Image (cartoon, rainbow, N blue to C red; front, side):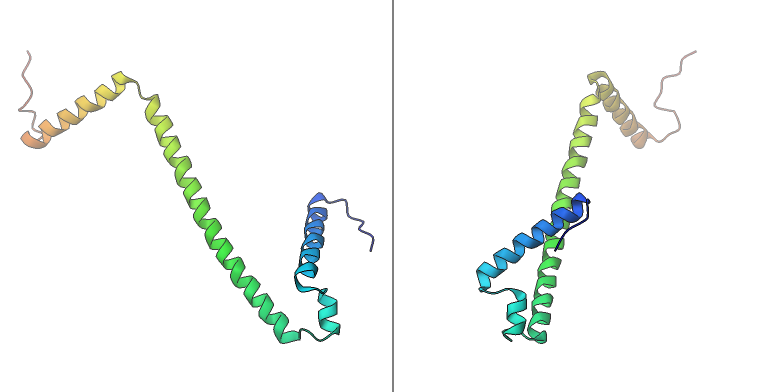
Length: 119
């Protein structure tokens, strides 16, 4: 069989399939065609194999999703830490002052009676 494609992705997949076939032949002692011809496997057994492989694939997908969620969370935490590090000490102090002012307003109401009158 001559492979004519120049697509590197297709060639990489074909190479992986070829290697996987060699692993299977070593593990099971036969090619898939030999299993069919020798009637070592029937259609039902191949379908069971497909089901098992798909179930494994679902587990790999779920595990990958969890890894991705962990990575996204880590990136977001790093981004928050970087933004926090950008806050100057003077800005941080201003936030503290605003927080104290809000506590006073919450205690006294927002009528302005807690402010000194200046004329």
